[in-house]
Every structure is written in structure tokens, then in C-alpha cells.
View (cartoon, rainbow, N blue to C red):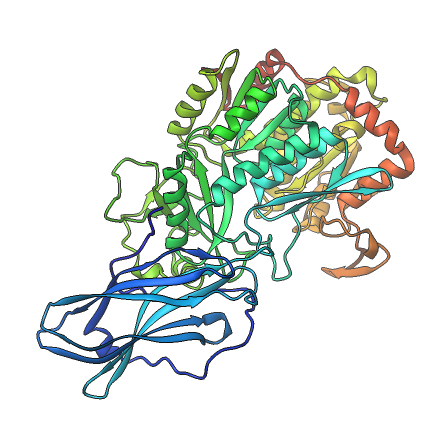
Length: 622
């Protein structure tokens, strides 16, 4: 595999997950003037991620960029753990008595610098620097490159764990965000269980997945492995949906009986080079892909990148064949549906001019390149200052968007397989893909009335981003209103009358006529009490508003505890726990599982009708 290196002086610091001690007593010094005189270029390691016992080999080139001769007494290579205050893991003399004329360069083969010990903590990030002693007595440090130290405890791709709680299957997501969440909720539908949102790491946000070159390959294979373990390796599935993890994709999968295969996966990184290494490995090994790299405010100290498939990988094709899939749906916001889209492309010697070309890497600016944006990126991506970047531009939304090339390639690959038809849910309107969840649920309930108990609609559930329970909601008659929690409470509540009430009227007119007299469940963390006030102002009775008590998590052991939030004392019970207790104590686990398993999925014709009802959306057959 080709090792990525930057042909410039690379300033490296890095994030790691609390590394062991065992540092050497040595000081890496820096003289700003001397650093501008000597440059290290073409810095190469034999790997970008090392396992215990792997040797770390290094080569580089030193260049005199002054107009005067340069005498270097000794060159040392230092490996540091910057997360431990710059702790020196090793220091090795690799060259001595080098004389360089103005503009002259000399290659240095440093050989094996270090053998990775087993004691380093998982996913540690280590920097390689060059310590130069000049004949005139001045010592300076040149930044070089870095590597990731991984072991069996490192999280190298996302995972979904399954456990049994009083006979009810409970699923837990470790790592990734929305794409993993889509797989999580699809597995819940296949297994007739329940799941909270993704597990929160101790430092906040989702558990970071360490960047190794094989990341995309591992993630694709993990998804196939999870489904095959849940439903069997050859069980017929009529449909597959391939797309981003936009909030409604789990509703589509649940109501259509489809397996959701992510079109991208989330990895954590502290440099653009780590992400570029993933792209290089992936594109060289049959996983055509590009990436967007930015940051998420919930994940301190680390950048995150969506590694995006440009075509069906072989594992997905085999999954489609093994499960006798007949219909493949492409799902996401269209290329022109700009949301979190402002970016600058990373330019390298091999940059292809075409947008979204295989191997392309874009830096995403959540706040349009503001000072706060750049500061957040610099604190997470330690080679940011050394990146050569193109002009600012708007690209497809980094988390929800799909590009035209993906649609063309994936639909073509799908239809090249025997007896497979490909379709795209086409829209550039992000909100349309939020709203479709309500129509899917309503049609699903309408179709399965004979298996459900009246009244078939019992209220509206406000589901903030990445909290939803599609199967349970349909069973008990909650119609979802999906929303982005950073929008105002007023604008979100206005959507009840703006689109939801007319949608319900199309299926259950009597319910729509008395919607504000019905129940509202606030499956919300942020703004939950603002929603309460807004609903009250619109005539909803306080007795008809139920507020989720706590964050959506799975931890029944703390249910008896309380917490204070905005002056309110609540029990530590999230929606997943509350709904699980309802299934266990009121409905009955076996009854619930049998009934949802017997439900009929929606058809292609019913989906066509739904897409025609949702504003700014259409179903395209390829």
C-alpha cells in the first residue's frame, strides 16, 4: 500500500486516549529561526497504524533552504506521546556530520526507530520529530509525521451489541453516529426489540473509532456481519435501502422491510493524513470513495470524517445476491440540498480536478469558515496549518447528502445484477426527508389496522435528531414528527399544523380534526420544556403532554435515581427504557413480538403514493 506523506514541514501535535507512562527524560526544544533554515521533506513511515510488536521504520530528506552552508553535527529522531505532555517514547541518533550547501538535500534512512509495546493504551497517537544539533551549538526541532498505535482493545469500526432484558431483545450501538443508528434501528425491526440512541463515551459524544487504513473495509464487512448474524446469511429480503443515516431512513427500512446499508461511515481522526490514508487504501482495494472531514461539537479533541462510498462494494453486492434482494433504494438528500456543506478541498500532488473523484478529501466548515470554525479544526486536526486547500465551495451535505455520481454508480451496479431494480428517493429538500417518516408510519398503520387495536392513532411523538422508535411508535399509534434540535421550538411546533395535520387527515380524518386534543410525547432532550410551553399556547392540555424524563440511554439500573434539568427534577428514564417497560408490563413481550412480526410491509405502489404526497419529493425508477 502507498504510505501518505506531506512534502513540507508538518507541525504535529495530537490527541490520544490517556497513554501509559514510561517516558524518557529528554526535552525537545525549538528555535524558530533554525526551524526555518532546515526542512524535513518526504517523511515516510512503513505504516500509518501499528500493532504491538510492529517495528516503526522511518526515512526522510533534509534540505538546506538558506543561502548559506549548513553544518549539522547530529540528527536524532524522537517519538513523542503528545497526549502525555510530550513524553518521549524513544530517541535515536540516525545521522551525523552532515554538510549541506545552499539548496542541497540529503536522504536519511533512519531504519527501525521503535518496536511498539503492548502496554500502550488503545488508539494512542504518536508524533515523530527530528532533533538537529548544529556545529555552532544551536539545537532545533523539526516536525515530521505521526502514527496511530492500535491493539485488540481499539475500536476499529462501529459495533452493535445485543442483549436480553426479560425476554425483550435490546440493542446497543458503539461508535459511529447516524449511519450506525440507521443500522441499529433496522436490526431492532428485524429482531422485534428496542434500542436507545448510540452509547455515549465518557468524554462525551459517540465512542471514537480509530482511523486505520482498512477502516472502510472493516465497516462494510461489519454491517454485513451484523445483519447476517441477526436474520441469517441467506434469508430472503425483498428490499435494501442504501443511503445516508438521515433520521427517517430507519422508518423507511422498518415500514418497507428493508435492510439499511450505509453509504458512508464515521471515523475519528486528528489529521487529514489519517483520513487520506484510509481513502488511498480503500480506492486501491476496490472501495471507491471520497471523504469529508470536520468536527462535531459533542466530540472534544478529535475530528470526525465521513468516508463515503461512490459505488457498491463487493460485500454489498454479495449481500444483495445472498438475500435474493429485488429492489434497491438510494436514499439521501440530493447533491444540491446544501446544509452543512461549506468546505475546502485538500489539494495534493495527485489531486483529480473532478468533484467527488475517488480519493477526494474535503475539509468541512460547520460555520462557513468562521474564526471559531478554524479554531475548532486546529484543535482537532494538528496538520491543519500545513494543508494546501482549495477555495471555499458548497458541496453535498456532509452527513445527509448523496451525490449524482453515487446515484449513477450504485443504481448501475444494482441493476447489473439479475432480477434487481433500482430506485432513488429524489429530493434536495432536507425537511422532506424528515417529513416522509410521518407518511410512512401512517400508511403502515392504515395497512395493518386488522392487526392493531383501535384507536389506531394515539398521538404525536416529537423525535429529536437520532432518537426514534419506528416499530414501537407504529404499534402504539404515535405519529412521528422528526426535527433538528437546534431549530427553535416555535418553528418545530408550527410543523404540526403545517404538514402533519394534513398528512394525518389523509389517512385518519377524525383524528386530524381533534389533533390538539390528543396526546403529545416529547421524546426530547434540548428544548423539551420550550415545546411544552409552545403546545400549551396552542391549546394542548398539560395532561395530554408527556415529557421524556432523561436522555435516551439504556441503563435500567439507575431508574430509581433523579436528576435536575432546567429546574425540574426528573427520574433517569429515557424513552427506550420507558417503552421497553410498556412492552414488558402492559403489552407482553411475546404478544408484541408476534404482532409486529406479522405486520405487512408497504409496497412499491404505496411508496409511490407517499412520495407524491410529500412536498418536493419523487420516486425515480432507474
